[in-house]
Image 1 (cartoon, one colour):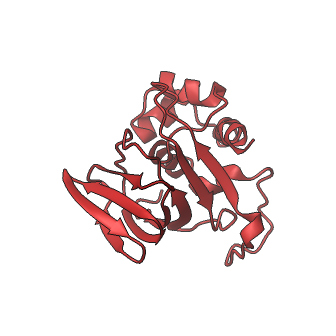
Image 2: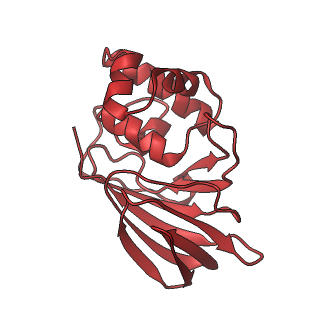
Length: 193
């Protein structure tokens, strides 16, 4: 449900802001055709792509999960109960159909104007996706074992281990063992419009 909502919100927000697909392409570095596919798709794009689009539209990526953009609520705070978290099942890239198997839970989806995006992430068992995006990222392993690959170097992370890195460098990771790892991830976007 949320993935369809994301793609619908991208299109609606772009139109509200009177931005053409070509202008959004210029702002994101993505092609006009790829953005058009995203707007028509039933699945959300990978987080790194979603984040580029959100920054170009001057919103938080997690706010694209909202059913109605509420401009009147208190923007200074976001309080989210465990059962109110928004899940985004990352099942693959719209562009090539490859399966990533990542699951994201947005922890502060309703806080507008934030520079940090906190998530609970359950990485896939394969490291098919290579992520690279503006900003910085912090990850803490809450459960399980996680193989983190950064700029070609591999780190095996266990419960309690953390990493803080420049997200513009190619990185990926995967769950190790029989059960998916669970990570707290905080993305910091310093390139605000």
